[in-house]
Image 1: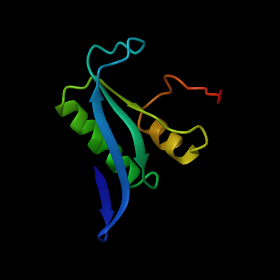
Image 2: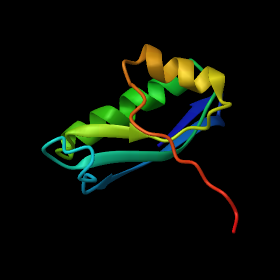
Image 3: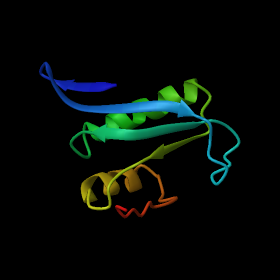
Image 4: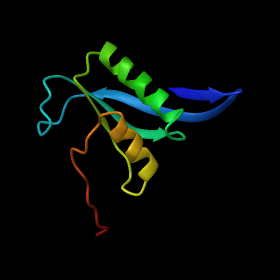
Length: 94
């Protein structure tokens, strides 16, 4: 999905329906959003709401949004949208 203002793309979200990881066990598929770029809170919030509405239509039981620890504005917008932190990934090059 994309968001446009005055004919210019100013945000996008890529959402897909995937099987839920057993650790989450929500009782249905998951809407996975791992690419989500937009100014916060608007139009980011509009895109998130559109993605969640689409996911509900597809039968998803939950939405999982991936974001960076340092993306404070996006994290605040997600918290204000009643999402909560479920996990963090820690990595190390080897």
